[in-house]
Amino acid sequence: MDRLESRIMRILDDRIGARGGIGYEDALVRHGIDSVDIMESLVDIECAFDIEFDDGMLTEDLSIRDVVDATRRLVHVAMEPKVHP
Image 1 (cartoon, one colour):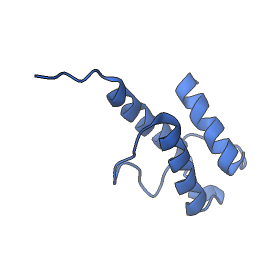
Image 2 (cartoon, one colour; image 1 turned 90 degrees about the vertical axis):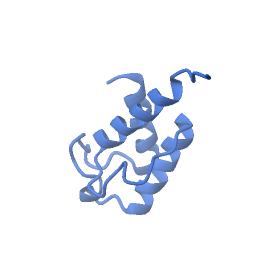
Image 3 (cartoon, rainbow, N blue to C red; image 1 turned 30 degrees about the vertical axis):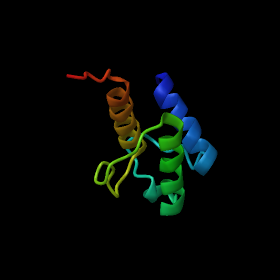
């Protein structure tokens, strides 16, 4: 687990706790984590990394792996130098 994943896991753990050891491929809603907690967790992640998830980027069968992958893509894009013509 790299630093980005570790930071996301801490954010999720702070918000929703360790609910039965959620695995990367397990949908969060199947573990009794309600949509309000999920949305608040995503907002926490957006604030922590100064990113914004786009509509359709994360689906209703959301897994932690989906969140990590989406965050990694957005952080990578945000860090690319902007080229001005």
